[in-house]
Length: 323
Ligand code: NAP
Image 1 (cartoon, rainbow, N blue to C red):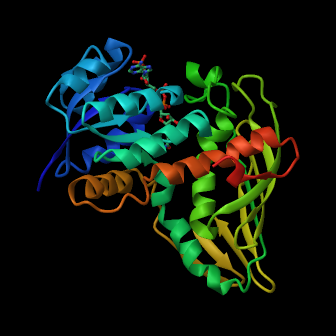
Image 2: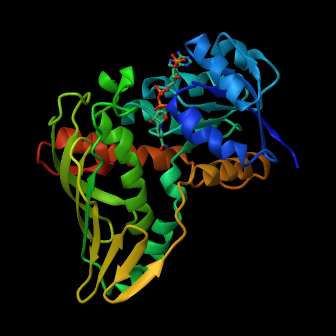
Image 3: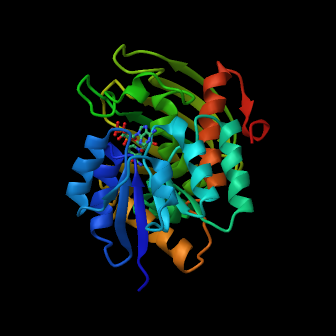
């Protein structure tokens, strides 16, 4: 089996705690041949962890080497667009962490670039690989005529939280700060289940002083299939998440590791989606599978929800006006 030679760019939390554990299980498909980061010491520590690949002092040097087929970008969001553009210019495939960019306008550049290049641009949205959401979608028929969906998410980051302490999150350059950084996962899951979102009306707030940017959002929105939704999320407040789909005479709830429809329970295998997203990236690059799950346009649509929500101030914003 052909192995993809991967250069990891940015040796922070995502690279160490999320991507490397997945890649460790996929050594038949990937070989980490190069790493680079802004701080050499971080690249050196990461290199030691992953089997001593070549350490490059700069991204440009890594790209100019002939030891990588693809780059894995795990960077502050504002670097995604310029780093993807540079990789494509140098003829490398790209897997890049979500969100696609800081805002919809700049994200569109990547959507356009992906149409023009024969290299793969894969936006890694691991929630598009989480099995329980596909089971919810499959079970949707059992909730006769779903009319309403409600999702309350209480992330509850404390002051020591590792994500809260990254400088680029403390001074966010991406729209809505935590709301879009974490929220694109939630919208990816909602769109996977119900399809496209037509419009959104939202209020956002800054509630927690140690979190950079706004950290609370409450919204009402409508899917193109007519289902109405409420989505409320807080990155600082703790609580029990609630996920419920309401039909005319049945309700579906997602409670911990079970899907419950009235008195029936359905179990599923929990997964985080990181391993699956790398497997999918491999199929897209090596076996020409269609890039559906890492599609830049899908990632742009997830981000558009938050741009609309941030600018809504309670007004209804049609997502098509942004896209
Ligand atoms: P992080 O810990 O701050 O890591 C970012 C890394 O980028 C740091 O190691 C930093 O370098 C490096 N960097 C910054 N500027 C650079 C430059 N000019 N050239 C090369 N490297 C540079 O952030 P993170 O939490 O890993 O987040 C990174 C990305 O992953 C974000 O897009 C985030 O949204 C995403 N993410 C996704 C998930 C998920 O569940 N899918 C979870 C977390 C994060 P130094 O440390 O060397 O200075």
